[in-house]
Length: 195
Image (cartoon, rainbow, N blue to C red; front, side, top):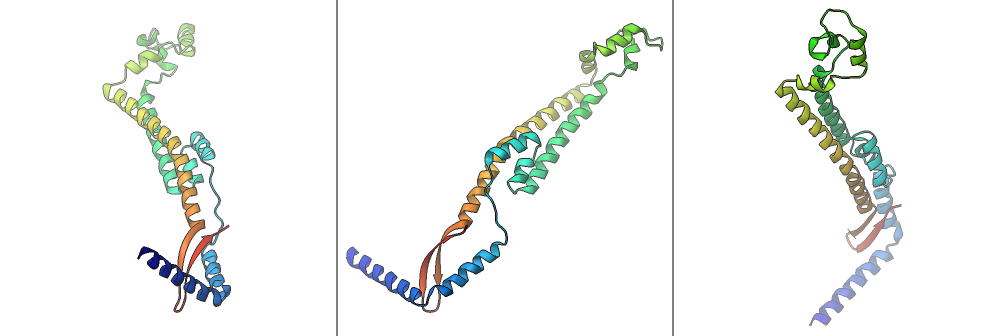
């Protein structure tokens, strides 16, 4: 019974294919041209290694290269924002030349800079003590913002080749496909390959 059903299905498929071929390739050629014209532009495959290097160089650039422009902009602004806020939390800890006149930083608080005070400033002698002066909230903000910025940067570098591979997979699916084309008195199974 299975053998008879398979034979009937095969004969029916051959008859339908023969009728479709009898109408000539012009009707299918028009369909193929219409499909290619809707594509509009030629898309190229994206190299995942190049996407990785671009994202490592400038956050979001690898995603932009892979065709995900919004994702690239989000990565860039997020990373710059996180690192910018980390710098904003750290900024009060930076000592200026005038701070070295303070007694806490080896100065004599006389309002004049001595050679020792200038030498301490040149050597960045009390920079570690300046971070200790930050409030606990600023220290926590500095650590959290820096960790978030670094985490987003690593995620950005890992995500870029994935986006390039996804782009290539979608491009392959659009270029190679199996279509069933049917008309009023014809049916055909067509393998679609676009170059």
